[in-house]
Image (cartoon, rainbow, N blue to C red; front, side):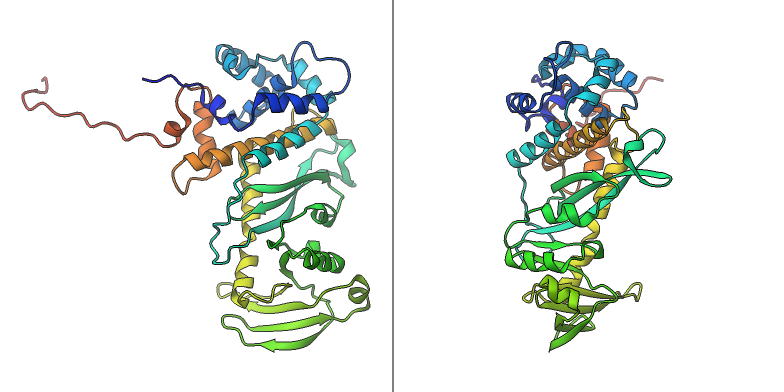
Length: 380
């Protein structure tokens, strides 16, 4: 039997230690760390994400129980008080930088989505992370509520959040959305919360197509009617309100569609005049992938119960959760076709420190059938 490092060690292979340490030097605050390093912090926090640890004490005891296996990770057990202090004081921006470094290094820009066109397809949305107003007063966004927002541009083919940002719960989704730079030729689907006529014009100049829904009170004139199958109507329109003209709204395409299951009517707008009208409607429907992504990370990663009450501690935990998701998404390419990140995570929760090839854990060999000896008798 060949020797293997732990599954945890293999999972971290896309993140070289020297690259992490270089970023840690750039994002350091205060005196030199003595009792524990940022790498020790990362190992402890990512282990808690992947194995379902619930508290600082739980993380400390789990690391101590696996102390002899941490050596190959270049880490050591970390006291809960030290971990709490690092989460509180050391900049969370380190893990944002690590996230994007990891994304660059192991990019899986896969355009193999379910549509025939080859353009990269993204779904843009934001999800509220609810916080206790009593414990997190700095995150107050309403009289009785505190929250942060996680903004994501999800690649619909690889299901990887290639664009990610965090903000205060009061900040509009549009502010972060406008900061994402989608690649030329890509298609982005988003809901009415991102309505901004000047941004529509900017996306058109960047040669990025978008699909969204028309606001109910939008004022427009029809320039041209198109013959299209599978939809109620397909029109070229010009937004005629004073606000739209002032913002430089581009010429748009309006597609009317009635959902056959719910009989609900939709009005989609896009700056893409090449794709079939039915494809435009299907692209918006596929935006549901980003909703499933938010549901998956909230159910499987630790971004609802937090190990610290400061803004820095919360952001540290969320960014490490996103890094963990990236590592799991890369590992999915070793797994059987059709496996989800959630399913892989359930396996790793029980096998994180097992010395076995990651590929074998995710694709176990079928059990060998024992050859029955015809002379063998079952004892009475």
